[in-house]
Image (cartoon, rainbow, N blue to C red; front, top):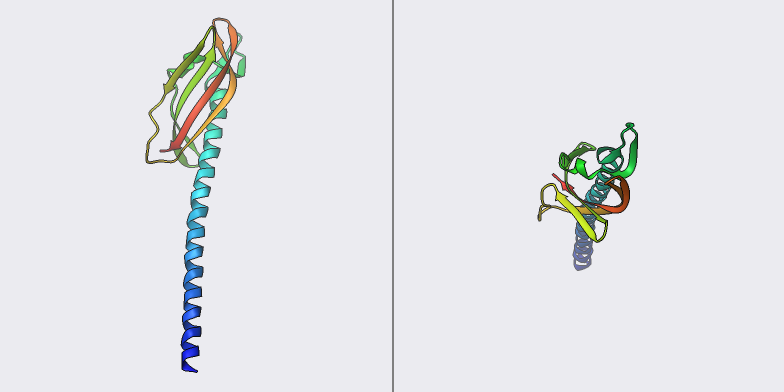
Length: 144
């Protein structure tokens, strides 16, 4: 009788400890996935801000051409942005074809090896020499 009570108590303790370990592990996994989702959202926000505002080509009439990028604006680009209360650093490069593939960049600091990074490349146009060329804007972002 005493042996069965000891075994029941031991089995209960093992189940409680197992439940606590699984709960802690699941919470850590949730936090990791949540941080990666935030980084992915921030990278998307950075790409959109670059292609719609900061790097967008403005013609002589002052009209803003979204998703048509002006390569001259890359030199003065700030590669740190505050998004949702977090600072994100990023690196930008552009590639386009005009009689062969040309790559502009990278602009910004190199990604840190000990931090999670997210990269995103989007199709856009590049304004060069009075014409629009098909191009690709690439961004690598990480939490600062």
